Image (cartoon, rainbow, N blue to C red; front, top):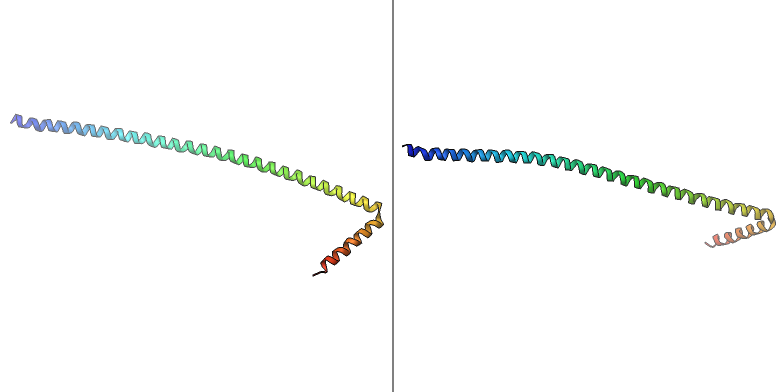
Length: 120
C-alpha cells in the first residue's frame, strides 16, 4: 500500500509545485500590470506637458503675429491719414490762390452731378 500512496503523494507534490508556479506567475503578472499602469500614467503626464508647451508656443506665436498685424495696420492708417491731410491742405491752398476758379469748378461739378442724377 505504500506504493499506492506514493503516486498520490507525487501527484500532490506536482500539483503543489504547479500551483506555486501559477501563483508566482500571477504575482509577476500583477507586478507587471502595476508597472505598466505607472508607465502609462507617466506617459500620459508627459504627453500633457508636451501638449501644454506646444499650446503655449502656438498662443505666443499667434499673439506676436496679431501684434505685428496691428502695428502694420496702424502704420498704414497713419500713412493714409497723412496723405489725406496733405491732399486737403493742397486743395485749401489751391482754393485760396484761385478762389474764383475754384467756385466755377465746384459749380460745374455740381451741375454735372445734378444732370447725371436727374437721368432716372
